[in-house]
Length: 126
Image 1 (cartoon, rainbow, N blue to C red):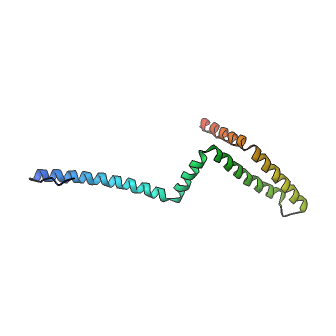
Image 2: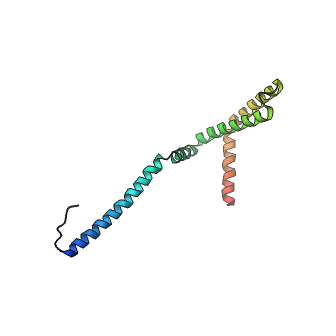
């Protein structure tokens, strides 16, 4: 952008209008860039992007499902059998917990497929 020779009032007004237009374009571009930078530094956006990347991987889906179902089953077994009550309840809770862990580990792919099918049916119904 070199300086153009301004010879009269009309060329001055035209140059001022061109500079105002250029300034507006630069402000819009700067706002968009700043918004992008702020979005990248927000923890929620960072975790959302990371989870989205994980969710797109089939192996990660299976592993996350195993872990999630494992936590849920352990919680339910602990609530039902209470590992701190009596020795009978403790042993029963441990056996049930181990059985559910084996079931989840052996059938994780089928469980993930079932969840996918269930969510796809819900989307189709909407």
